Amino acid sequence: MTTILFLIILSALVFVHELGHFLSAKKSGIRVDEFAIGFPPTLLKKKVGETTYALNLIPFGGYVKIHGENGEDTEKTQTDAGTEAIQNAEHGGDTERLSVDDDRRFTSKSRWIQALVLVSGVLGNIIFAWLLISIGFLSGVPSSVDGRYANDVSNPKLTITSTLADTPAGKAGLASGDVILSLANGERVYRGTDADEASVFIGESQGEIQLEYIRGKVTKTSAITPIEGIVEGKPAIGVSLDTIGVVRFGIFRAMYEGVLTTWDLFREVTVGLLGFIGQAVTGQASLESVSGPVGIAGLVGEARVLGWVYLLSFTAFISINLAVINLLPIPALDGGRLLFLAIEGIIRRPIPAKFTRIVNSTGFILLLLFMAFITYRDIVKLF
Image (tube, rainbow, N blue to C red; front, side):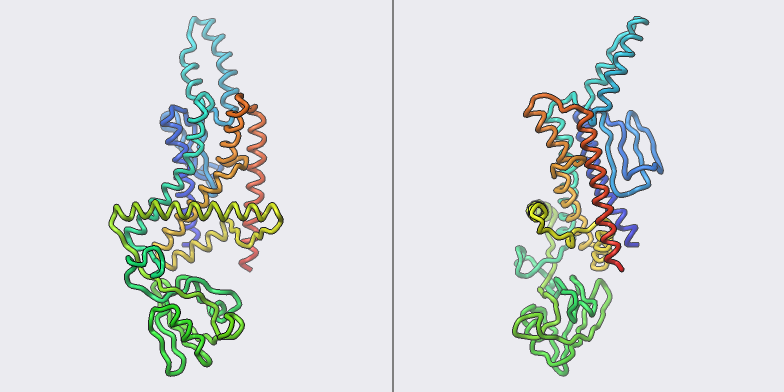
C-alpha cells in the first residue's frame, strides 16, 4: 500500500510540474509535441490534436517535449523548410505553413516568454503545495499551543515530536506523532497534556514507566525505563514532547494562511539547501540527511500511519523541495536552462544548440547516477 501511495504522490508531483510547463507553452503559442508522465518504455499514449499524451513505465519523472526547446527541432525545421521550399517552388506552392510552424518554436519567442515557460513547472509545484496546505487548514492541521496559531488551537494533546535512536524510547519504537495518553510509575500517574510537566514526571520516576499512547487510530502501551546521560542532570527516555492541537480555518483564512505557510516552507527549504551546498563545497556535508525514492517512500508510509492530514503536509513539503531543487543552476534542470537563457541575454546571441544538448545530457546522466547512489544508500539502511 505504501509503495502504491508513494507512486501516486510522485506521479501527482511530476504531473503538476509538467502541467505548468505545458499550460504556459500552450498559452504562449508554442507547439507542444508530447506530454509524458514517467520515462519510457511507453505503456499508453494517445495523440490529441498536435500533442501526444503518454503514460510511461518508469514513474520517477516525466517530461514535456516543447517544439524547438532543445535545438534539434530548430535544426530539423530549418532543413525541412529548405527542402519543402524547393518542392513548393517546383509545384507553384507557398511556404506560409512553414512560417507558422517556425513562429511556434520555443526559441522564436522572446527570452521573457522562454523564461516564463521554464519557471512555470516550479510555479506548478508551489501552487500545488499551497493548495494542499490550504486544504489542510480547512480540514484541521496539527499545531503547537506555543506556535503561531496558539490562540486558534483546539483539542490539545501531549505529542512526541522527535525520538532519539539508541535510547529507551527509540528502542521501544516510539515515533514522532505518537500521542501520549498516560504515564504511570508505580502509584504515580500523569494524564495531562503539558510537555514540561510530563518531562518532570519522567525525570522524577523511579524505575519502569508504563507509557500508553495512540499511533494513528491504534492504542499501544510500552514499558520504558528512564536512563541517565540523555539530558543533563536527570533521567530521560529520549523523546522531545510538545502540546499539539488542531487548527482549523474557514476557506478564505485557510487560503491566506496557506500562502504564508507555503512561503515560509519555500524560504526554509531554500536556506537549508543552500547551506547543504555550501557545506558540500567545503567538504563538511553529510549525505545522512539526503533521501532518495526509497527513503521518501518510507516517510510516506510513516505519514500515512499518522493520518491523511500529515500525508497532505508531507506531500506539500516534497513539492516545495522539488520546486527549489529545480531552480538550481544545474544542467538538465529548469534552473540550468534559465542560466543558459540569462547567458544568452548577456552575450546577445544564442548558445549553440549542440553545446546545450551535450551539457544538458551530461547533467541528466550525472543526476541519474546520483539518484542511483542515494537509492542504493537508502536500501542499505534497510538492512
